[in-house]
Amino acid sequence: MSDALNYLLEVRKNAMGPYFEFMKEGGKHLDRKTRSLLSVITKVDSQTEAGFKQYLKRALQAGNQADEILDAMLVCMPTLGLSKIIWAIDIIQKMELSEFKPENLGKKKQWIKLTPLDELNEGISCLGYDNRFCYINKREQEICIYDNQCPHQATDIPVSALNETVLTCPKHNWKFDLETGDCIEVGDRPLNQIRFKLENNYLYIYN
Ligand code: FES
Image (cartoon, rainbow, N blue to C red; front, side, top):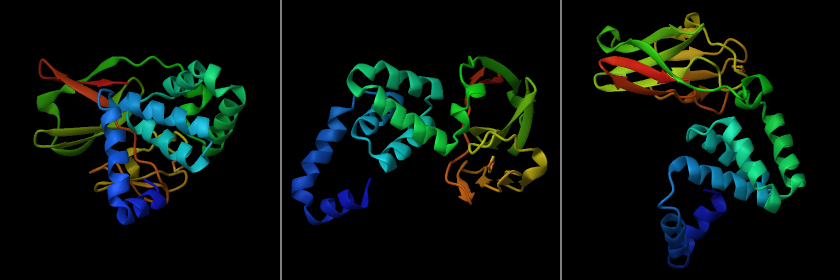
């Protein structure tokens, strides 16, 4: 939320409260992915650059693929118009988001059998699949899996870049904490999480 909205909420709570309640209620039947896609579209429509960048990152973090975001904009072309979409694409290109690079678009994801669950170590580990690898953080019953590709420019971050729980991308030194996936130094985007499921005592990832 912007500083201005925070300010109004503080100094005009009674007036602004119902507005936020309305916003919350209005989207309660939508899942997080869909809501974040719609927010992106509203920012393209209003052409607010800071808001667009913020909601674009949020839409990716909510699990949207770059292809889905592009499709959502194109589907809304009748109301947005081509010039607003071009405005948005210019910003996306300047942001250098790895997900939007042409070579990373159009990839079909699938469930990949990664490892038997009882062979998964406690703490941080790194496992390979299909000429790639991912980082896994297992703490008792909780599992988080992160893509090894840097969210900045899709550099493969090697195991040698791991120091305890901190992973440092060799290209521009963004640092990530594998406890949370957050970028803790230099950059501003977290590692991409990989969806997973447990089936018949096996860990599968969707990538
Ligand atoms: S590619 Fe720039 S920090 Fe990783």
